[in-house]
Amino acid sequence: MINLRSINRTDSDDIANIISEKNRGVTKTSLQDLKLKIVERYSNYIEIESNKRISPIAFTKDEKIALSSLYESKTKTAKKIINEVLDILNPNHSDRCLYCGIGEIDQIDHYLPQEHFPEFSILHKNLIPICGKCNEIKGANIPGANGKDYMHLVYDIIPIESFYKCEIFYQTQIPKIVFTVLPKFVNSILRIHFEQLKLKIRVERKAVQYSLQIKALKEQFGIAYASEELQRDLTKSTAFFGLFYWKTELINKMIETDFANSVT
Image (cartoon, rainbow, N blue to C red; front, side, top):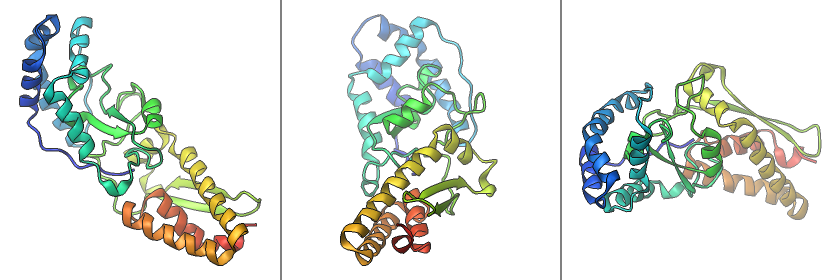
């Protein structure tokens, strides 16, 4: 998981500009009628900014269609919002998904899903660049409802200490790698996020793939080369993603357990 910096925009101006830039028609008229209600709902987003959660409100079918059209809008302002959300990404992260740190960013998630919160469909604070797999798993689930929750990676800050433990078992030719959330964080949103996005199995799968790459280097070029590659990758992972990124944790554990000599 990786935190995202917020962009600096005036929400009420954005919605007014998008409605103004839309072509005349039923949708534009409907949005003009809804503008005050949208701005009022925007003010409720402070609950999300305060690490709380909010519930959806009722809209008619036609209102939902009009509100959802804000995101698909071809207006200058809507395009600028989406571009700024993507431009704010840290280039050091190599397009890694903010939710999982595994896949590449190829979609924008509506943190409060459009299906239930169409009024937030173009609110920049509600747009999080992520990978398709995370977006698929999260779907239309409402954060904070029915035991499901997800970190808002602008406002829910990732701890500056390790929040999960990596263990490696060498009993077989393919090492078993296990990631678990530390007991200290069992009751936190971080643990729920980890479970809801199925990060345990996804991270462990990627970890095994990486370990097999290092094993292959050992077999082809020798133990010294494999060990040096681990050190190089650790330096890059720490520099770009920090000490508590899943791959940094993994490589540290591989070095600690003398992976190059232990794996067969």
